[in-house]
Length: 423
Image (cartoon, rainbow, N blue to C red):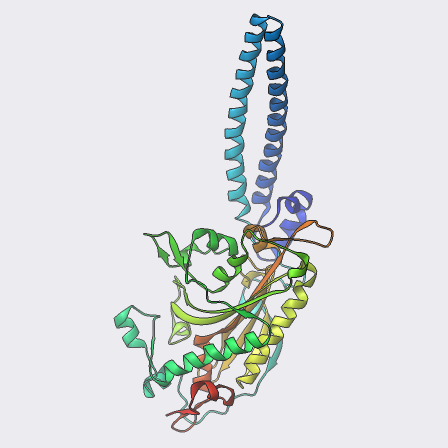
């Protein structure tokens, strides 16, 4: 959430930067400034009334002692009138503040200066590429056909048990899932991230803190009886560990990693690009989260990108890193880098990770602050990244490592799988 101070001091700058996200903020910004001006006026009037009440209350005591009962009664009536006016002001101020907060959450985060303008994925910038083009055998199959051929992922059984987008992993397919999760966690903890195991159900306050609510409510699974949400990513519970916390200057960096199943409704998704593992309603993901001082957050972002890139390189897959344009960024992000793997069998790139800096946007919603070296309270910066999301990693691993009659397991995963091939 953007701060009121930023909106008061630099409204045109906010409007200009949000235009990079193709968001017309003028009407909302002007309404926020109007509500804030009204709020300040109400506060000034309320403070003046309180001062008058105190003066009148002191005067009543003096009048009573002097035996001036009629004047004292008149003063009491004036105090009652002042209190009534104060109550009116409080009610107006409460409604004003609610409208102000409702308007503030409608504004997305400002994109940083490095974010390119653009409307969609076609305007994203390729930062770099790596890995070799896989050499596939004649008649190479996409992963959903390989899964059926080797009986490692059953999409039809998932439909029977739940519905489309809930596959059942079987035999070596299930072991490959577990191997990847453990491999990712081990790499993250070796890089200094502390492993946590959070709940996969969160309350509305947690959804609001990281920006999923109210922006992405339609994409989350809701448990109405208990007013909980199934997590769309471990980012939500892990980042909310720091909600309402005040860190000390020496507490940085904060680095956490977690594995969770993730649940996304993916409303409106259809077509060939969502076939097989390309888009699921339930999937496994390992996440990394950092909390940093503002001056250190972009160095931390570079470190996170290099960390994820190192994992992808070790898997031996062809990849590219994109800097997302304003029109393709999330509501809460200040800058995002996407990692994609090349699927030679499908002839397309598959997104497998997003690494983002949210600057102080989430921290403001979370009330996550720290005391600097001078004891002054400052908002922290938060960052997160997929390290990694499993479905499309598995898709690329199966497709790009298929040989004549079997699938080869990358050497780095064999200590985790206990086998070197499927088939």
